Length: 165
Image (tube, rainbow, N blue to C red; front, side, top):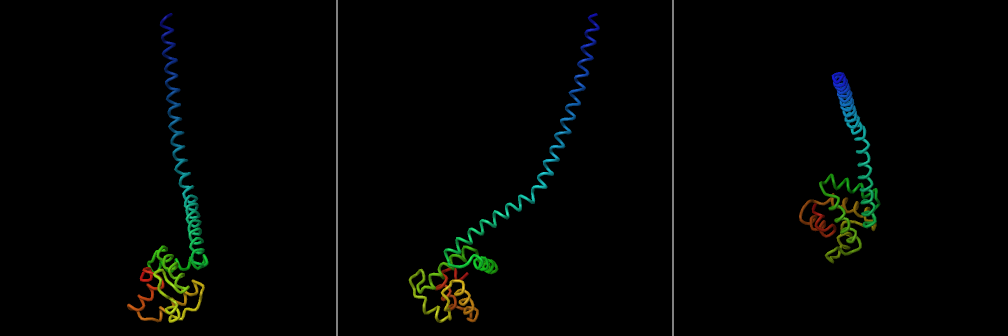
């Protein structure tokens, strides 16, 4: 009778071992499926993440343009146009804003160094008081001048050191 009990216990242990093996296999399949789902989810989410990043970058640029617009008295649209032109000339946005701040002061007759700019602007034919329009008039006058030290000196008086960029 004792032999029957031993045989019965061994048989019960064998069935449990098989059940745990099946559970382990099923858990491995579940883990593989979860990994595949996570990878697919990441692939599907990537474009949305990129769009969100672009929106954030655009919003930050818009805030920067608005800030610079208020400082210089130039519309946000014109700031955007000037930024594009600066980039085409290999100048940074910071160079542009520094030069425009200097130029805005020069439009009122005195630059940061205390030098009178009224005569220079009059000689260039700049009549506009709006900074953007005055900049366009200045650019037109500069386009008609020969490159040289005179042109560079005028640029420095009106735009500061950034006028040589």
